[in-house]
Image 1 (cartoon, rainbow, N blue to C red):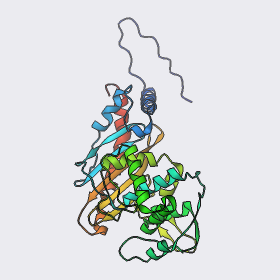
Image 2 (image 1 turned 180 degrees about the horizontal axis):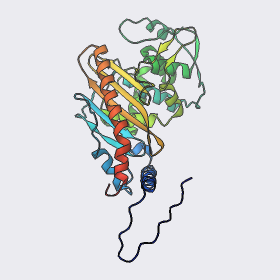
Image 3 (image 1 turned 180 degrees about the vertical axis):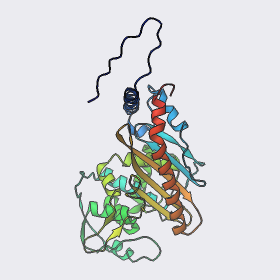
Image 4 (image 1 turned 60 degrees about the vertical axis):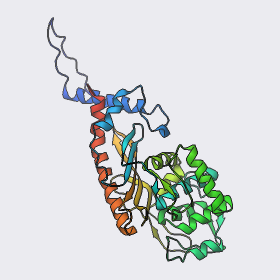
Length: 333
């Protein structure tokens, strides 16, 4: 408990004494808490600060973020809103980042309880045959074998398996074309007006989006506890299969708790990431999108560039955000 400080009343004309250090710190902490509480009065998917808390607008302006030198990027914080975007928001190939929408639509159509297994799905021969592809990312599944919905979503999101993405689309909508139509309708409903999906896996280079649009999707998807748990999975071992490590090598470091990688020669390296940072003692979700790193290069080079750019951006956000919020909440903030 804090000791109660009772200063003597100053005489006429006396200047008020400076606040004791502990009390000043307490008042700043309370101001930060009030600022964040007020910022949360709007739905999180709006991505905007509450108009009743004008000091929030100065948070992003006072931060020096390590934006990538190429491509495009976007960052937002739960309860605060957007910290800005970088780069021209022109639709570009997004490779396997596409699977964020695939998983989101599956979970909207077939909701899963947090920790639940979901529906039972039998793998077909097409998914089994595509597991041996030498030209795309795939994971082994056995024709005729039953998998849980969670197992297949984990395989798709953790190891970025294209064959499993198409299997889930056939299970949900009867075919990839019908499922893609659902993806585009969902994108339109989320306000992703610069996004076009042409497939469910991201192998198609004409599936295109922007960092700002993918941020809208990430904010919506991370509201689902099942989705959050799946993208936070470090590795998965399918029944009768081998251990598959998460393609997101930032997972588990610097507060990173997800989300999805994507790379190809046309797309370069892409990474949608989710991290946490305490502000005023309260953990806050930080979301970022980095697209178009080393576009035109081999996928391994693009992936490394997206990872490095994301790591630098995450570090600058986590180091600068608490102080920026404190400045915004303080006198003259």
